[in-house]
Amino acid sequence: MDSRKSIELFAEKKVSKILHIMTILWDGWEMDNRGWVVEFEDGSIEAFTTSHGGICKFSLKDIMSARNDTMDSVNSLDKAILLLERKE
Image 1: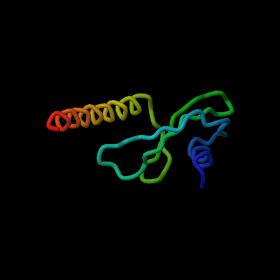
Image 2 (image 1 turned 135 degrees about the vertical axis):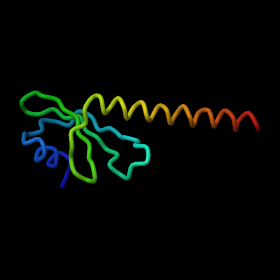
Image 3 (image 1 turned 90 degrees about the vertical axis):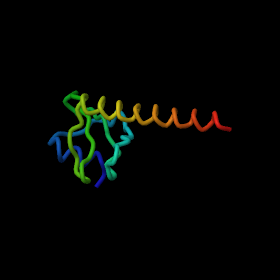
Image 4 (image 1 turned 60 degrees about the vertical axis):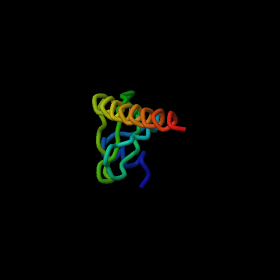
C-alpha cells in the first residue's frame, strides 16, 4: 500500500497533496526513516512517519528532536573528519 493511502486510512480523511517527504536519521532505529507533511482536503496540514511499519503522527516537537539528534551526529562526524585530516 502506498504512503498516501496509508495516511488516509490512519487519519480517516482524504489527502489533498503530499507537501514534503523527509528522511529521518534515527539513532539506533531500524527502518522507519521516512516522514511526510501532508495537506488534507479540509486544508489542515499534519506530519506523519512510521513506527514498525505502521503510520503514526509526527509532531513538530518530534521533528525538531529528530533534527537535533541528526545535527549532533553531523557535528560529531565533522569533528572526527577534522581530527583525521589534521593527521594527514
